[in-house]
Every structure is written in structure tokens, then in C-alpha cells.
Length: 345
Ligand code: ASP
Image 1: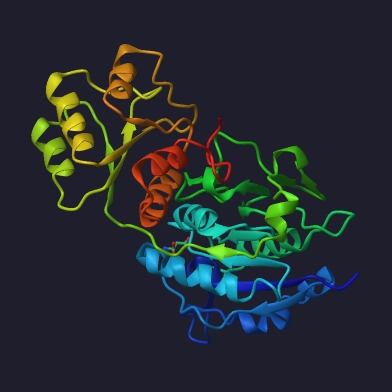
Image 2: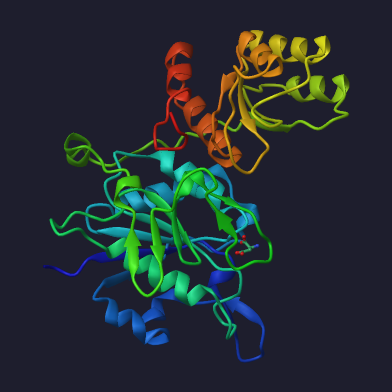
């Protein structure tokens, strides 16, 4: 069997930092990856390195960068068997969630990873994250098809569905978690793939060419509720000119105040065409709008149930769907069903 060809795309972040002769942290040149990490050669993989993206700190990432990344993957899709995207950890879950929606008919692995400690520091977690991400992107089943043909995120021994992840620690090396979905693979001495939890494209989808939809509509907002939020605050958020969508981070199973001004503000916004998605502030568990009066009232005014979706997935899905300019009924239908495994049905 031909060696799998993997494209490494370095977009920036801690993983790509090394010390120069003066001890200053500077970006690492991934073109010399095989000299730097001879162990990569043992992987039996052909490695290509993208030269187009300029590295940035991921706090500066924008939907325009997501589109650039999607285009690089599209342009190399036929020639490569898998992709490893090296990204700053701070916004990696947003970018990886966005890409999971933007890459349509994806049938090859796109594995995001990064590190908490720069590559050039002895104790780096980047080396293992990078090597294992390459190995996962190159893994095939006995029939030759890719092991994980979806957008995933590898960090500290776990491969997770990208649009189920959040960065939960600024300190720990296992910085990411997927609280509502099991890992796609667990890594110890061996890599164990949880086959039943991995989405595989239908034979029909796998035959379709990769399509990217680059248009993301940025007229969205995330509104996190807290006890004491005032009518003035809430109204001013929903009065933002041109606003089209909001992710409402509610309490517990999707609950919110039942005061008239609160519900009126949301109902007026929905009346003006703004879509509101209810997700929970809790790390795990799901929104159930039928359970309490507080949730039920949101449902009655037309708030969309986000189930167990992360805010990262909800906001990028909203941007992506709004960017498609669908008729409202199609838009709401697509929003309310899982398209890339981003929430449980
Ligand atoms: N600030 C860095 C970034 O997100 C942090 C990291 O890579 O871990 O680009």
C-alpha cells in the first residue's frame, strides 16, 4: 500500500515556538520537521508542509482565516490523505468547530492539535501531540479507508470530535475536553479507536467532491446570563444593529428568568428576525426546554433548543448557516438537527 500523504498546516500558537540562539521564543520551521524529529520517519508517512499560512496567535483568528484554512484543505484534498492543523490552543475549538461545518462532504481526516508548552522547551507536550496527530491522520482501516474521516482535535492522549470540544484549562496539559461525547480514540501504548463513535461518510458522500462554504456571517453574539442581568443590558445587546443570531447561555437545563421584561426582550428580537439558540452554561448535560416552566416559556416564544451543543459549536454553526442565506424555514430546520455530530438527537 502507498504511504499516506499528510499535509501539516501550521497556523500559529505555542506549539510552533522554539528558542533561537539568544534564547528568544521564535516560530519553528516545520519544513525541517523530519530533521528535528527523526521519529517522524518511523511513521511511514509522506509529510508535506503548507507554506501559505502566516502564523498568528490564535486570539487574533477571524472567519477570514477559517476560510483561508478551508481553501488550503480543498486545494490539497485530492493529493493528500489527511491533514494535521497546528493551532493555538486559545481558540482552537472555535476554528475546529467552524471547519467541521465549512468542509462539506469531508471524507478524510482533519486533525487539529497544539500544545500548552512550546515545542522548543524540553518538557513540551507538543512533540507527542504532533506525532500522534500525524499517526491518527494517517491511520487506515483494513479496507484502506481512513480511520477518522471527520474534523477532530487531538490533545493529551485523547482524540475528540472537534465540534464537541472546549478549552477548559489554561494550565493543565490536558487542556481540552469533550464533556458530552466520548473520545473518538484513546492513546496509551497503543491507539484505541472507538469505532462506533466515529462518523463515517455514506458511500454517496465519499464520492462527492469536497465542497467548502466560506461565507460566515459575523452578525452574531453570545449572551451569557447571570443573576442580576438588567433589562437595559439585555435590550442593548439585542439592539445591536444588523444582529441576526444569538447564542443564549442559560442556566442548568436551559432555564432563564421568567420576568416579563426578559421574555419580552427576547420575543421582540425574534420578531425582528433574530435567531436565538439556547445552550447551557454547564460543562456537561443538555438543554431540555420541556422540563421547567422557565425553559418552556423560551420555547413558546421561538427560542431554538441547542441541546448539548458547546457555545463554540453553536456560534460557528450560526455564522455558517446565516452565511448560506437560506430561506428561514430551511435555516431553522438545519439549525435544529445535528449536521456534523455537534449535538445528540
Ligand atoms: N496564545 C496562544 C494561542 O492560542 C496559546 C497557545 O497556543 O496555547 O495562539
